[in-house]
Amino acid sequence: MKKFALLLAVLMAAVTSQAGSYMYLTFETTDGAKVSVPVDRLTLTISGNTLTAGTQTFTLVNLAKMYFSTSDEGTETGIESASSATLDEAAEIYDLQGHKVSRGQMRRGAYIVKTKERTYKIVVK
Image (cartoon, rainbow, N blue to C red; front, side, top):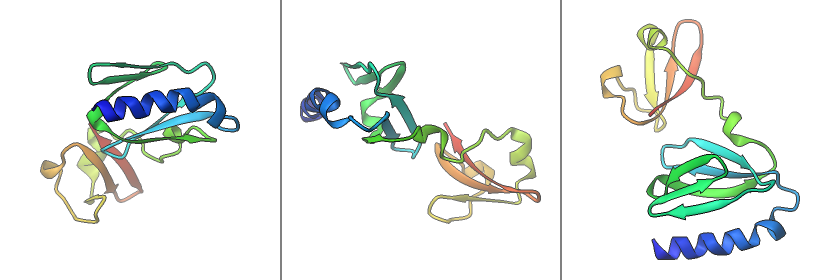
């Protein structure tokens, strides 16, 4: 944990010099979700096991990686909100490893849901 905090402190010091042409700092969580935060006037704060970046808050153990990006990757995932009606219509549900799962087997994570009309990527939180 201390190594991560030290690495984050070094990263914070390098934000101005490294983020020259990058508009966003993107955080990827262990479940595959991505959240991008604009680097313009970005402040990073660590308190206990929580990282706050701008208006976003993350639990440190749930962060897989963070990196600078030129676009808001949090909105480019193709992941949509799906209602329970969509899940009721689901003909097939797959996890990201390609294994077919039932609705009852779904836990936290990302899934591919196929209905008669279209295919969705969803995240179960």
